[in-house]
Length: 87
Image 1 (tube, rainbow, N blue to C red):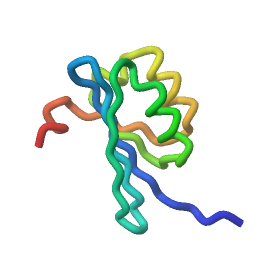
Image 2 (image 1 turned 30 degrees about the vertical axis):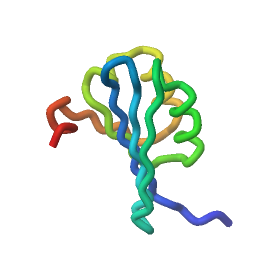
Image 3 (image 1 turned 90 degrees about the horizontal axis):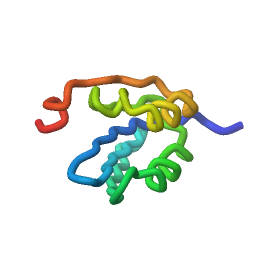
Image 4 (image 1 turned 180 degrees about the horizontal axis):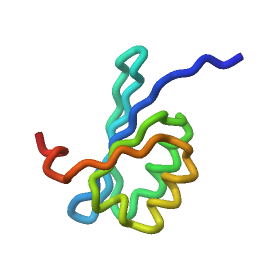
């Protein structure tokens, strides 16, 4: 039986690229990455971890292609104002 590992994923898009941060809430292991373009490859890799929650700025939630990926993940989606990602 596989134990539950609570991953938290945060996504951001800026200047033609896509960035992400993934943290294992059980061990505090932290990973960050970025990819030019739409970030599809990066997102595919990160969703393999099965994050339990995904944090996104409001503009990303309104992206139809990304919204489909996020809905398929089964994770709780938490939407925040863009300025909260700059703190």
